[in-house]
Length: 449
Image (cartoon, rainbow, N blue to C red; front, side):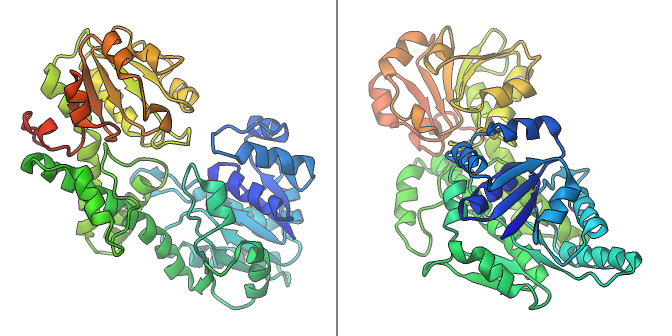
C-alpha cells in the first residue's frame, strides 16, 4: 500500500518507519530542507530507542523516502497521514498547519484519497476539515471523492516503536463506512487477539484522545497530591504507591510521584481541553486542579532548595542529573528541569548539568546562559557543587557511587525529584536527603505550596 505522511516530527517519523517496516511504500513530506537532507542520510534529529535503525533499514530497502515536495507526496499515497504539530499559541490550540496540509491535498489530489489525521486536534476539527476539503473540490468542479479519518496516536516517548507496532487499541473516527475496508487492510499487520480496531464518530474519537491523556495526567497529579499529604502526615508515598498499585482497579502505571509531568502531550492536552470546555461554556474544575497541582509540583524542588539554603542562592552551584522530561527521550518540552533551572538562575545560582540524551536540546535553548555548564558525565557535575538534584529517572542514575558523590559535593545534600534513592540508607551514610512525599525526610522543613 502507498502511504504519504506529512510531518517528520516525533509522530510522523515513528509512523513512517513502522508502516515501511510492515511493507508499505511510504513518502514522508517535511518542509524543513535541512531536516530532509539529514533524514535521507538516515540521521534523525531526536532520540527514540530503535527509531534511527528502523529508518536506515527501510531507506536501504527503498520502502521509505523523504521529500519537501508536497505535490509528489499527494500524488503518491492513497492514504495521506497528517502528523504535524498542534502547539498552544495565545491560549489556543494552533491547528493552522493541519488546515494548510488539508488544503494542499484538496488542491492537488487527482484521485480518491483518505486524509487521515494523526495530529491531536480540538473536538469538532475533523468536521471542519471535511467541509473545507469538500468546498475546495466543489470549487475545482470535478468528481473527485475523499474521506476524512481521525486516528489518534497513543505513543509513549521511549517506547514509541513498540507502541506503534503493538497498539493496545486502534481508534478510527469516521463519518461514513466507505474507508473501512482500506483501513482494516492498512492496520491488519498491527492487529492481534489482544487489541482491536474501534470505529466511532469524529467527535468521540477526538475527545477519546484528550480524555486518555487527561486521565493519565490526573493520575500523576493525584499521586503528587498524596505525596504532599504524606509529607504532612509523616508517611512514605513509595509505600503508599505500592499499596494502592496492587489494586487491579487502580494499576501500577502513572502513579509515580515526582517533580511534575512534562512533554509535548500532557500539559498541552490538559490546557487544550480546558480551553475547549470554557469556549463551550463549561468550567472543568478537575482539569484545573490537575494543571494547578502540576505547576505546584514543578516548583517543589526549588522550594525545598530555598528552605535548605535560603532564598539568596548567589555563589551556590548545583549538580543537576536529568534534563529530558522523562527517561529514554531527548525531549525537553515542558520539562521540570527547565522550570527548576530558570528559578535557580533568578536567585543567582549556577548549574552543572548532565543528561544521557538531551544535552544538545538544552544547549540550543540556553546557549547564551553563562550560569549553565553542560558536563560530559554525571560525576563531573559534582565538582565544587553545593548539592545534587535529580530531575529525570534515567536508569543511568539508579545506582551511583555514593562515596564519590559525598567526596565531591561541598555538602552531602541530595534533592531527589524522582524518589530514586532510599532515604534511610542515605541518612545512615551521612547525607541530607529530600525526596517527594518521603515523610520525615521532608517533614522538618514544614514547606507550604
